Amino acid sequence: MLRPPLVPPSARPALLVRWLYAVAVLIVAMVVVGGITRLTESGLSITEWKPISGIIPPLTDAQWQAEFANYQRIPEYQQINHGMSLAAFKAIFFWEYLHRVLGRVIGMAFALPLLWFWVRRQIPRGYGWRLTALLALGGFQGAIGWWMVTSGLSVRTDVSHVRLAIHLLTALVILGGIVWTALDLRVLARSGGTARPARMTVIGAVALVLLFVQLGYGALMAGLNAGLAANDWPLMNGRLFPTEELANRSFLDAAINDPFVVHFIHRWWAWIAFAGLMVLARKARAAGDRRASIAIHSMVGLQILLGIATVMTGVPIWLAALHQLVGTLLLIATVWGAHAIGRR
Image (cartoon, rainbow, N blue to C red; front, side, top):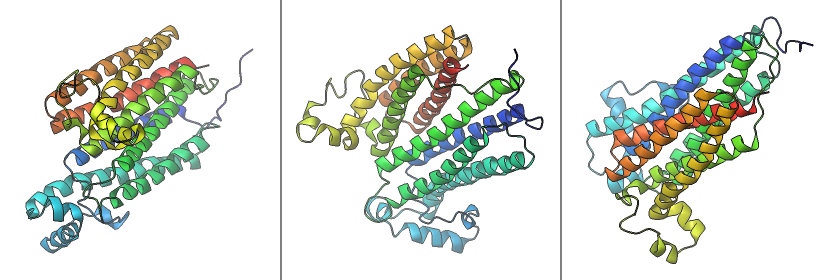
């Protein structure tokens, strides 16, 4: 007996899939630009949060001077960049401005089509709440971003690396949710409206948790400039284990705040994540999705090679940004694999 369709006649799941994929591309770009913003130490160049008027950049010399004057009041300028020229300020302003504009573009690219689809009743049953939750999480992400920036405006000379990690991981949760939802809708469209959403399996959840730990430590690496703690591999400054760093502080403190220990954990947790992802890839292949398995294998191998190269070459910005891009693509591949083994 055929299962009755789960979608009303007006629903357009295939159209929603294309929309969500477009938003996912924008988020990937946002993550990469955010990484460059951190690597160029541009994140504190804009010291005010103006969600509406902030979309217009300084246009006159007086406006640029006012922005520069705001920057000159914070510790980063006074202790690190004292004497910076206006031209140099404009260079770092560019990346933070681009990052914030992309955030606004993503918000509009998600909210406005969602409203349109809702009014026209083109959203299949059971997906409205999920899409609304993703929209709300996106708005919350903007607040997290400003919370991160405020950590570097009064006492510190940079943003909190912990808040930076929270900011990145929230973006990746949104990206993962959008990709998972798009995959559900794609299967629904191909089934003629009878397929049910995939379930999260234990193997899929474990693989994603292992990867999120690794990605979180990647953010801590960027926030602490921990990639510069060692430029050899597999040893770190000729040592296998950070005995000296752990001798004077608790492991939990060192695991979050010590650049050498953070680098050590990020370097070796990669192999634990690798093992979990290989299991997921095998399961995805066994479930009939060979392309998801190939995507996981390809991205995880490339990501490890890029990580080693980034460290051994002194963390050049272009290579570190490419490492972050592939990490984001690896997350997408992992969500794809987890979805493949959870389809029903």
